[in-house]
Length: 347
Image 1: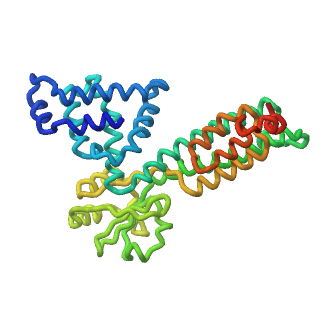
Image 2: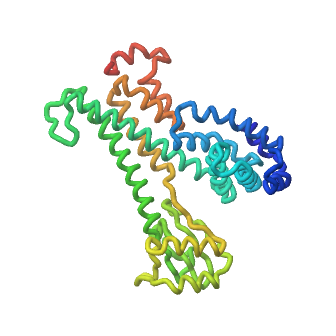
Image 3: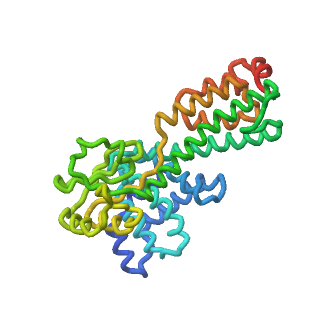
């Protein structure tokens, strides 16, 4: 993708704007070179199929390591807008550029906020959530085939069945934790509050205001408190207009405006005053890492079957925090462990 960015950077934006305004002009050569290179690089993204969501995820994963590249900027996003206009919104070229435009806009937004690590952890959360759920479904099917009742009476389990149930319970616990986190954040986004405070941000317990806005009308400071309890300052260009609009909205006895009731109005209000509405997404955290590590250790010590190898491999690949040695010890033919494997795996 570096070459794609290099060609995008070389496009003359001012000339491109002129061509857009003159429909009969030929497509500039620098634009054609960029599109040809992007077409070549795009083939890597659709190799696994034509699932639109997966393709979009692949584009993000390919561009995120290149976030520092100077071509990922507002200038380039404007170039993509011009190219789409040049070809027309319904043209195949415009359609292919949509995911690239979205990806670059997202990366640039996080880059401007100096929060690229957050974006990386958001992507990792969805990867790990999918991988954990896949492993759980595999273990669930295995329990059904081997006569192990999940959540039911299992007084006469064989040692092999007991270990299978232990693996399922460990991974399912983590799976439920990740699902709850995802659902909680989505629910909080919808039911987000705007809290009008008399105290400053340093005088309140931010942990009680997660996924909500905190606004001090006297100091003219407004923050969004993330799911993890981090403070994100929101920039408002015109606080006088902002206060006028906020004062018109009904509040509860805690001096809160329920944004679920006024989501569109608040979004427009904050955006037109120079700020932004923060849409919280779940991100992979140290707590998630610890919980998954503990669950994997339970699985490893309970003799995973050979059929579980790809699930363990995928999890350790995504986590990438030195857990691969545990995987290899039990689920690889490397390191002269073949004899040990035969005795410890249920092949």
